Image (cartoon, rainbow, N blue to C red; front, side, top):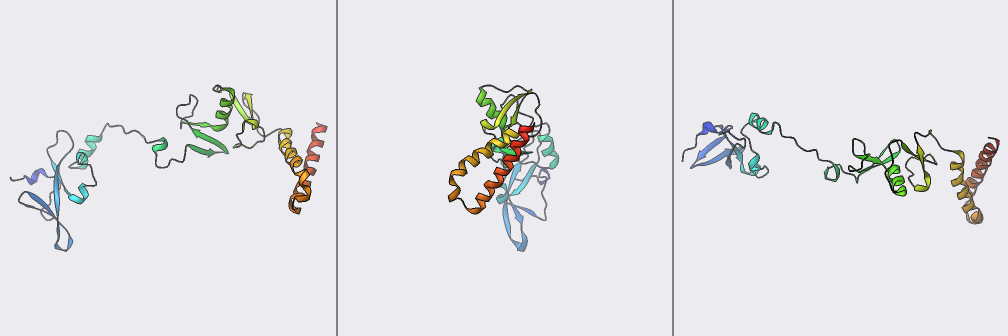
Length: 213
């Protein structure tokens, strides 16, 4: 059967040759490799394209086009869904840190932002309350550490809250640490004892300020 080479978009007589209905591609050093003829995948196109067999295995046979023009026409108007979430190659577990806050990937949350993330401290507060937080409700970190999302460190506010932390909220964890280390004074290294003494001095100054205000 004679094959019309005019219907083959990339047929080059200097590279390709036909022998008994089979196509061979001229490689370097005088060697040849077998090729395959595939019909263009675009509907209505009667052209074909030659491909080397080893390369054809790496492609989908139903996704071969005779030219860039045909490929563009076939794919025009097709909307490809963006790969997001755990299927994305750069998926890191659905948790990220931005401006000190921890964000959790929850695309189905009713108050998730445009990139489908929700602040972790809001989720912790919602779990504690058993309901979704309203948009005007905010969550304050008592100790001022934005990624410390323990429920005992969180406080629900109506509206925006000021930047920073209360003095008493900063002093309480220091008092807890001092009370824990005081009975162990004889067992502590010198550097730790020195640090505890400095904490006591700072705590004494802070308490003096609180008493004055």
